[in-house]
Length: 391
Image (cartoon, rainbow, N blue to C red; front, side, top):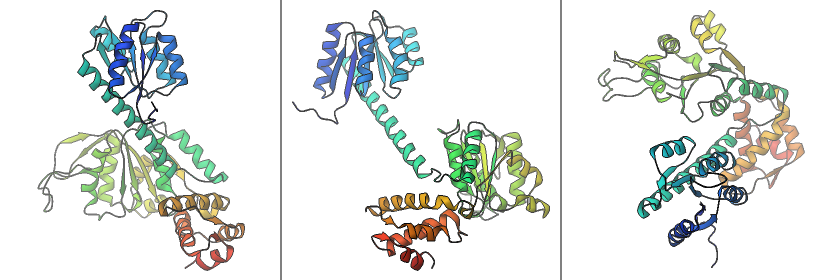
């Protein structure tokens, strides 16, 4: 019989041959591929040499018991779900097994229906874990910082140092330089990575709506408030709130943000109840906030609350040596979007691009690369760059 590569593969670790045979028959009938190991050491060896989608493991075994196997497997294959089995089942055994990371615990001999349901649930969980990791890798790749210039290395080191803490961060830099990417990387590398990352563009929300957007509102608090709405602070609970273009926030909203940062509590518009929020705030601006403080358009106390750590994202003109790497990244990304092979670009074209003034920074560079992909030849030449890099 030919092996179906998509067929889930399950390992049975049990010192009783009759139990292994019975479980194998049941699982094979359900179209699972099944391997056996007669003790804990053999089971660990199998886990090192073969990829499994789930494991059925006896708790009471000679030499190496099931709990020890579970603990070692958590290091070797952390994503593989373990279903623990024991003829000496007890609540204590079940609690101990689940504390050590077991997916579930079944008494021997297991009920047939419960066994199959538990195996299916374990396989579904394992599939979700793998899919989530794949998605996270794709997201991380999408938002990776491209380049090796000294200016960019400084930003990377700052991110790595501050991310594991809960310190508030103020990210500064010109439009299009990558401030949002810095905020995303801080979140991804933080202890809050499994929580939400909620973004608010303070410049895109009318001043009369910004408080409702940030703090939510109660039904009937104003004409269009036809139902209760959770604000961004509540949505970001347990995660990170990214306040982009914070310099464009109204003074009234600034006062409420300051209170939220000081007391870790918010009040919805039209409400009276205080709501506790656990949020890390990362803010960004293209403005000189100290000048805004002098002009009395930005609160000095809020500036100091937000700017525990300051990270400045350099303009592209200060990191021109990163342009070739960025261009190659954009060519690959665009090929994926268009469903085509990545276009090549000549050294002359790259040199020409490095010499331009990039007032729009990385965002402008990507737009130019997309224009060159559409308008240029099979290999983007220096002539193509001269013709199409500037409108």
